[in-house]
Image (tube, rainbow, N blue to C red; front, top):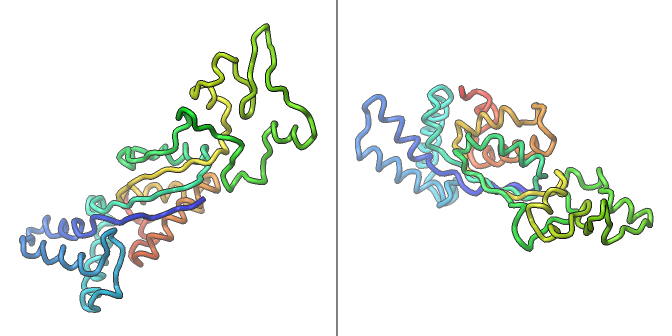
Length: 243
């Protein structure tokens, strides 16, 4: 499984939002914050410390410290910050677990379809299942047992497909083919989530949870990449956010 943190957007908006409730906002202050963030981060919202002035970096980090301090309790602040993540190869059962948080993502999650015409899943498996399970078709092949291309049951012809047989007249229908797919097939997807909702997902799916191992690994890999980007975005923060 490969996990990519693509972007962290909205930190400037979140910092500006802190000015509003106490009526300390001015357009000048807002533009100063936006200019500061532009100077110390790249186009995807990651730190660009080497190209920035050390005073700007210190000022930015001071503001980010304040943001996470208040954002733990006043969670709307952290809803202004979105992360984008691309995942390659999570097994389909784990994808279903991750999909259960779609409301937290504001439904911003798109995964591999299993019903695309002309695109079939074979016997591929996610990293977690590789070497742990053996589909019946492959087991029979290892045993030297010939598997017929067609069989007849109750007078009806069935054609061999991955993991089983399909009634002949449906053999090319994607909606029927996927009825034989195993939950171990790998699934790629992309999603976006704000930091407040991400904290809930992390609480439910982190290494200490009861989630599937590959799902827990996914949560931890995202958390690690967030921490690498900004020290303030650490695992303690996700556990402390009141959501």
